[in-house]
Image (tube, rainbow, N blue to C red):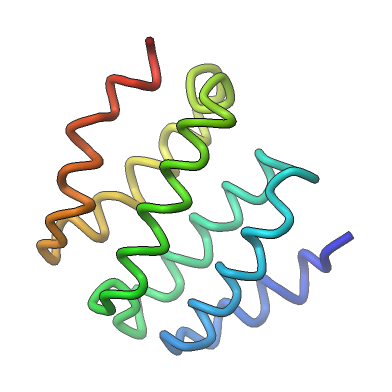
Length: 115
């Protein structure tokens, strides 16, 4: 099981490279705890925002991949869990605000959650 407290402490570092590595590591744990991992992704992205993570192209690519995975594999989680929906919108908004077109396109597909 991944060490949640350690991840939270590392997220506070707010360096883009650390943020990216944490998110890539969490990606492996999605099947073990989809809800917990998704909420932690949100916390890490919000922390990483202080260090400018949202300006990195690899960050936008990873966020799109993670969200698309959740839409494909855990849609009911996003449908039924208000905290996860809020986290989804917050994370996407962070990247839309800086103008990533692939994230903007993904936001237009959010109606998929409720299909």
